[in-house]
Length: 474
Ligand SMILES: [Zn+2]
Image (cartoon, rainbow, N blue to C red; front, top):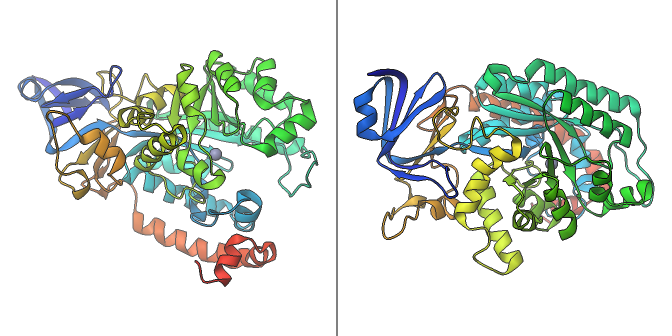
C-alpha cells in the first residue's frame, strides 16, 4: 500500500490528455505532495493506496482547473462602469480610473480573483501595474499566478487626433523596476506556483529601446513577454506615425517573436500578420467577451489556429466583460466565432474547453505543471456537480453531453471543489482560504468613495452612460 494525501474517485473524468478531452469512466486520481501521483481505475486506486482523505464524488466530474490567460484583476473594483459605449478608455474608464487608488486596485484584485476561483479558475493570468497587492493575495490564498507586470512610457493623458504619444522615460524605468522587483520577490515561489512575466503594455506604449531591453531581461530570466498587440486603429495610427509600419511587421523586423511571446487580442491583425506571428512561434490569448463588449469585434483566433498557432482564453476585466468566468469565455468564444464565420462547426465545445485548460497552459508555458490530469503534474483540479438543473440530464450513450452542456449551459455555480497543488481552496462551494464577505464589504466601501470622487468628471465628459442615467436607463 502506498501512502498518499488524497484519493479523488469519480465516475466521469476529463483529463484533457491526447488530442481531445481525455475522457475516463470510473477512474480516480491519487494526490500526494501537491502532485498527481496516480491516475487509475477507482478499484485499483483503492487497493493500492492508503489515503489521508478520500473524496468520493460519483455525481461530479473531475477535470483540470481552468486557466485564465489574461486578466486585469485590479479593475475588479470598477466592474460595470464601462460598456455599451464607443470610447471605452476615455469616456468610460477615465473618470473612475483617475480615482482608483492602490488600495482600490488590491481590493479589485481580491474581488476578481475570488470570483474566478469560485468559477473554477486555478491559474490567474493577471496583468497590470502596482501588482504587489495582487501577488500577495495570490500567494496567500494558494491559487496559481501567472502575472505580467505592466511596463509603460506613454504618458496617460488625452491626445488630439494625429498627436504622437509623449514618452516619459522615468515612468518607463519605474514600471520596469516594479517588474524586476516583483520578479525577484515572487517568481518561482512555492515550487513555481507564481510566475512573473514582462508586460510591455503595447508596441505603441513603450519605445523601441525599452522593448529591446525587455527582451534581453526576459531572456536572461527565462520568462515570457505578454503584450497587448494590434488593438485597433489608435495603435495602428501611432505605429504608422512613429515608424511608418504596422505593429506586427515592425516587431517582426526586430526579431521580437518566438515561443516566449504572448500576443493579447490581435483585434486588428490581418490574416497575413497572424500567419507571420504563428510562423515565428508566437502565441495568442483571446478575450472573446471583453473584446465583444468593448470593441464589438471577434478577434482572429480561428486564423491563428488554422495557421497552426496556440490560442488560450482570457477574461480581461470587469469594466467591460463584466465577469471572470472561464465558462462564460468558452461559451462566447464558441458562439461568436460560429456567428463570425457563419458556420456552427467552428469552435466546437471540446475545442474551447481545451483553450481554457491544456492549450492555455501551453500558451503560458506552464504545460509541464498544469492543464491536464497526468502523473507528475501539479494537482490543480476542479470537481463540477452534475446534479444541477443546468447540467441535467446526463447522457453517456450513444454520445456524452457533459462537454457541450459545460460550455453552453453551465454558469460557474456548478463548480463544487477547487484545489491548487492539492490544497483545497473551495470545498462544496465554501471558500477555505479567503473570506468573500470581507472582500465584498471592503469593495463596496471603496466603490462608494470612487463613485463620489468620479462624479464631476463623469458629468463633464457627459458620455453615453451619463445620458443613460438622465434617461432612467440604468
Ligand atoms: Zn488586457
